[in-house]
Image 1: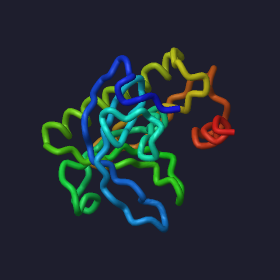
Image 2 (image 1 turned 90 degrees about the horizontal axis):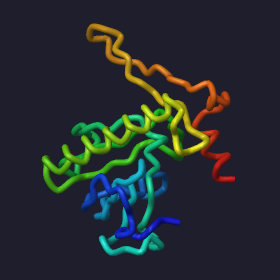
Image 3 (image 1 turned 135 degrees about the vertical axis):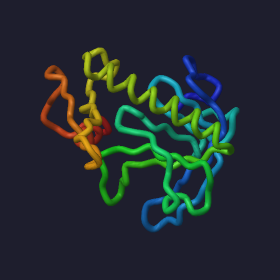
Amino acid sequence: DIPGAGQHRDVVKAGFLNKLSGRSFPYIPQWKRRYCVLAKGKLFYYERSDSGGGEKGAGVINLEYFDQVSEAGPKDCKKATNVFIITSQDRSFFDPGRHMFSADTLPDMKDWMRKLQSTLEHIRNNNRTGFSSTPSTPKATKDVSTGGSTGRRKKEITDNTQNTGTSSRERKKKEVK
């Protein structure tokens, strides 16, 4: 169950964003205005700021399964401005592993990105030290520069007590069952 928009404690940030929804086949993507609450490693979104959480438009993104927040490029956001993307390495045809949001202003977008990135880093740090509040924690990743202009690659950081040899996608499926 998703708690009501006003029931959260330890809120890092809350406010309205536009969320791109309906990106999977056969739906046409649409920007929908949502009230978003960043709290306890999750990004909750609602149709209104006074939503009870049970509405069709309400949802939650568990940031434990995502790797980074980045500003969208021109090809990603043809019909919106101040767009940022929350991405995951785990992708499939039906689950692209990314969520796109658009803020009303550039400073608001930068603030959301900063707070989301800080939350992702906090989750990774907790996963590395084994103090995660969730028993089935996916592997965290760390950007490791390869030097020069060759870009970056991902290096897996694993906690021996939590490494079961399964991917985070497989663990998510097991948790749902």
